[in-house]
Image (tube, rainbow, N blue to C red; front, side):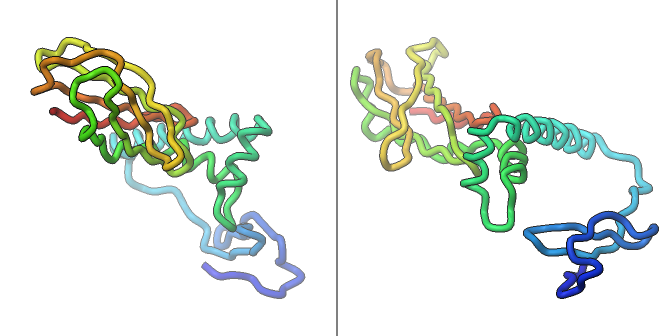
Length: 186
């Protein structure tokens, strides 16, 4: 791959030249690269799943670019040399991650809090917390609230007398609707 500098003929060019070269534009620069060809190998099941995920991500990015508010949010978060479309595509391709559920302030009483650390390459839009008993019965479920430290805080609304073996599940979601989950057992 080569970059074209100070060439008035090829500056801003894009497209293919015969079956050999391809001009592309990236961050205001003209890139000259060897033209890619189709693979001679049949796609694997994993490859087909990746293609399907990519198509879904492209569709989301195209729809997101039609909404001026969403487009502006992605443009503001996009790193230098990247577009709002690229940021939306990357956001759709990557699910949020629940890194940690801090249960040190949860003792089974109403008003106790859980701190959830959830991250995404753009932003986490919601975190839903579910607390189940050791036997698997639902104790409570609800939405966590984002605090000023960018942690999600869930405040218990139901007493949990038998905490041992209880399971706390946090499900984080992002703008495209991807989810990430983490479960901890007390």
